[in-house]
Amino acid sequence: MLRRTVRNIFLGLVSILCSLPMMAQDEAYGAYSPYSMYGIGDLTRFGTAYNRSMGGVGIATRDKRNINILNPAAVTERDLQSFMLDFSLAQGNRYYAQGDIKSVNNTFNVNSIIISTPVWKSLAMYAGITPYSNIGYKISAFVSDPGIVSQTGAILNTVQGYGGLTKAFLGGGFSPFKGFSLGGEVQYIFGNLHKDNSLSISSSSYRSIKSGYTLTLGAMTGKVGAQYAFPISNKASVVLGATYEFATDLKGTVDKFEVQTISSLNDSTPSPRSNSEKLVKGQVRLASEMGFGLALKGGDKWTAEVNYLRSDWTSSGMDKVAGFANVGNVAFYASKAQSIRAGMSYVPNRNDIRYYRKKITYRAGTYWDQAYCNIDGKSVDAFGLTFGVTLPVFQLSNGLTFGVDMGQRGVLSGSMVRERYINFNIGLNVHDIWFIKQRYE
Image 1: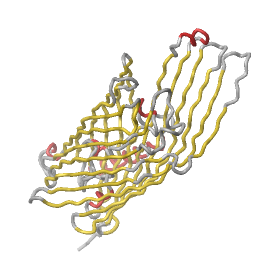
Image 2: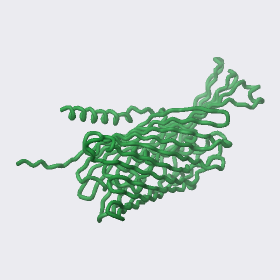
Image 3: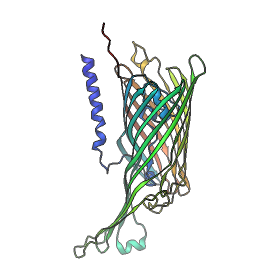
Image 4: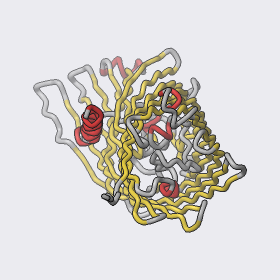
């Protein structure tokens, strides 16, 4: 009776947490970084809390106890009649430095909601929603030119951005023969990006100006993947994985606005000016991406994996279209992005009936990322370490994952900002067995 009550409370908490995205505000920061002001912002790539605690690997991951969305072919690794739901949260803490200037920021956001079910024999599917990119920044500075300030008084220049793109996806996979799996995924990417620039002038003789862009965007694309697992001994096997995400055109509108205000009561405020431009085919594109993975598995006890991903954004057009490219006087160019990730997991004894700590899964990983934006001729690189644990809850494969990601992006040079961060991830994995025919004697 007590176990049933606790289980109902656990599932109730999952339902409440799943409703959080409905309460999110457009002005809220899903992420916060000065590097998110370029293009479509920071790309979200590390999958669920399960993937993130292992350095972001997943292309060659085959784990029947967790949903892996980084390779559509991985969905075939499951108990035949299992239903799974994964819900994860992300909390970020960032510390910035540029010369003598230092600042901090914290964010909290829903990372993903995913469900997965079997369809027929070796065929299974999954569906979910997760952030695709995030924009979040606010930078203010006083104009330092003495010739201008002597005429107008103090001028405060502020650039601000918020919003992001969301990815809804539906995928499936099947296994045509033992050890080999194929999968595919359809994606719909949508959302709004806001980038504002304001000049606040202290003198009542001059108008303060606020201008900026609102980008309303959408795109359809897809992803395919394959995995092949084969034994190398009685207790170990190797898994090879590969993925390819297709390039696609961004559709939507770029709305530019300008508002002038004046503090003097003896002068009228001009009407706001705005114009809207529709993106034409091929003007702005999301790049394709190739990924390769290699994993070594020690049965159901441990696994180690390494991934490599690469995408070419040089022909995306983002550095040529207003609203995507122009942010102050900093030169931004779309470039090639790549990533190397490595991770491992270990569980002492998953079926131990005496010591709970032996059933805990321990995870660790590392990564190096090169972003798709090039700033003042310099690439934006990030590197970090990840750690995590998955705590089993009740029976079956229900689990609670806690992960931490510690790293650095950028360096103290020119227009670059050094960004150090500690990110925390929490994931709930709900597992149940469906479609069981009851038998009575």
